[in-house]
Image (cartoon, rainbow, N blue to C red; front, top):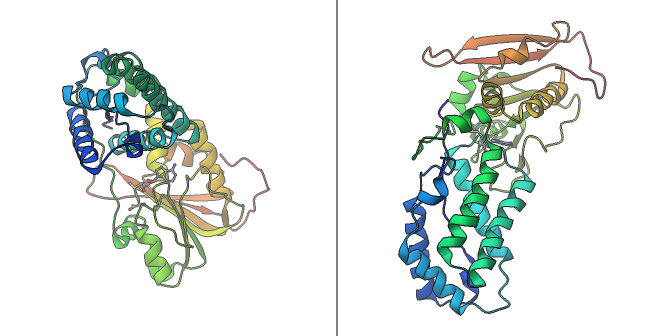
Amino acid sequence: MVVALTVPVFSLMWYHATTTMSQRTGWTQSVSRQLARNGRANLLRDGAPDDLEIGGEFVDALNRFAATAPDDLDIREASADAARRFLSAVLAINPYVELDASDRRRVQAVYRDSAERILAGEPVDRVLRSAHYPALRTWLAAKYPDSVRIGLQDRYVLGQITYAEYPPHLQLRVLGLDSRRIAGRVLDLGCGRDAALVRYLAEAGVEAVGVDRSLDRQEDFLVPTSWFDYPLEPDAFDLIVSHLAFSSHALYQLNTDGPECDRYLARYGDILGALRVGASFVYAPSLPQWEERLSAARFTVERWAVGSGDGTTASAVVRSAATSSEPGEQIV
Ligand SMILES: C[S@@+](CC[C@H](N)C(=O)[O-])C[C@H]1O[C@@H](n2cnc3c(N)ncnc32)[C@H](O)[C@@H]1O
């Protein structure tokens, strides 16, 4: 699997407080140019903080800003905004990096600290190279499995992982499902920003719920959260689907010996525990290592090839009608 990451550069957005419209336009252009300079540079490369490019006009803009900013400027909101931009750029390059609230707090603190130092008169270049980039790099390095991080050490520039959303009919075909036969309560884990399959099923009268960390719309049947945080009650669903989502992330952890492997395995058990008797968890790609560990008395596993013969398979794990789970029971 190709893994990549980016270096979105320092973009302090707390300028709203003090500037005029034309100053802001100039600032925005300067930040965009700076972002473009290091768009695909590899922050994890040995020596990266020193050889990242920092534009002179960007440094001038920051210095001008530091000279005119009021002493009591509140930079919390701006630091949070800059941290959000940085994290979404990290995910745009490698969506398999797992982020939670503590990551947001940590990255935000890096931006706040750097902003405070620049406002206090420290040279911009020194703050970026000796504090800001190294702090982001330390944080990012810990989010990468060692095997991947080491493989990236010599690369200056990185590619991007394909990570797309698909129309409902294609998802149903890969998952071997016929929408006319779907009934009861359905959950789509990692349904995508557009939640295309959930919408399609809801329009067909199915009681479907979609969960995704990237959902930006508020609708009753969409839950904008992580699949780790969504409450999965036992015996709750007649069908759970996840097309190129939960199991892709679990496989990334498995294949790279990633730090979140156990967490994914535990969640896989929770998902299977949320199936009603006779219900299935249908997903692509397959997770053969875990499927083989399931009790044959309690689950039936079916696996089939999808796509153009590159070896990708999809799986359905059906909870056997003969058994029922105990609350808190470990499944895998
Ligand atoms: C490749 S897309 C597939 C989307 C959809 N299933 C489809 O096939 O069109 C994977 C989705 O998983 C979501 N995702 C990744 N990690 C997640 C997490 N921890 N919790 C919830 N959703 C997550 C992403 O936001 C993305 O929308």
